[in-house]
Length: 128
Image 1 (cartoon, rainbow, N blue to C red):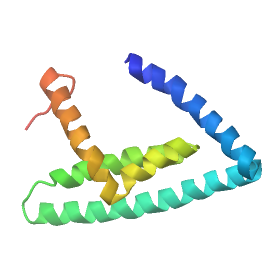
Image 2 (spheres, rainbow, N blue to C red):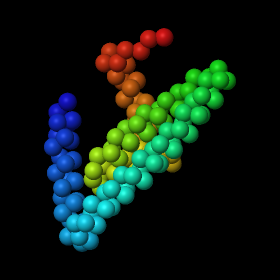
Image 3 (cartoon, rainbow, N blue to C red):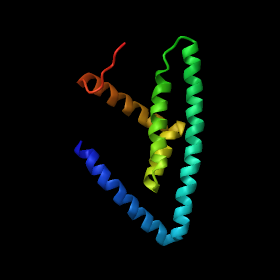
């Protein structure tokens, strides 16, 4: 939990630094405009990816298969959407990486391993 506390302190400080740095290059109003634009476009993309994932999950369920990949995609899209809602260039970048399908693959295996580790430690309880 210490790493989470450090992230909660470190990420906003980095975001402020990036705001000041980019604001010095393009001006403060452009920074605000870019933040609003990236957030809005990111949320639209996340909604579209989420709906596509939902449709794929329904299709697999209708065929009698477990939608395991779709659940992992949905988790990545959900986390990415939260990052996209937070104002900042760093959080928007991480959010886009989690929402875009070709970059999402990098994180899915890590999330899967984390969930399996948490299930084996008893942190998360999985019942059939």
